[in-house]
Amino acid sequence: MAIAETAFAASRRLFDQVTDELGSAGAATLTHSQLEDLLGSRMREVTRQLFQDHLRLRALTEQGLPEVADATGTERDRSRILATVFGRVKVTRIAYRGTSVADLHPADAVLNLPTGMHSHGLAKLAAIEASRGSFAEACERVNAVTDAGIGHRQVQELAVGAAADIDAFYDALVPPKPNAEA
Image (cartoon, rainbow, N blue to C red):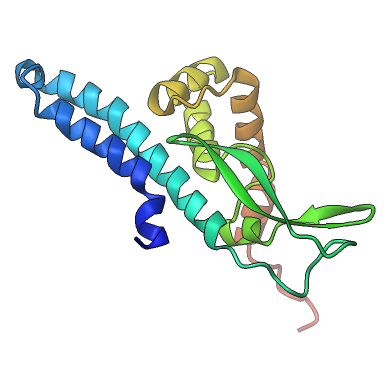
């Protein structure tokens, strides 16, 4: 069996569990809103597992870069947690180390991973929800939609971070003043 087929085995098992549940006699008595709630929670976990399985596949197939090595020439796997709109996943990638310098993770650039723990999608959702009201309300809404377990302080930091470039954005919209000497 190919590595790509086996990498998604956990996702397939979860999806099969959902279809079995939907095919049961108990599901036949559910209202449409109960079905929405059931599918919302079950499929969020299936989607999170698909995300995790894809990241695991990338980690298994990541090729070491021969021109990058630590002081001893040893490649090492490193993991980090990424909180996404689907839930938390573990990202494993090769780390290249050097003496008195930060580790390099080429896969982080390929995935465009944020420097912090929260995905760009989660940061975007936090900023949108924070713009609609208080940070406490934003925190409740983000957690209701994502089950991310994000805290009030994190929502506030993500919203402030999203606004950090706003001045530069609007400055770029203003046309330059014409040169008086021309």
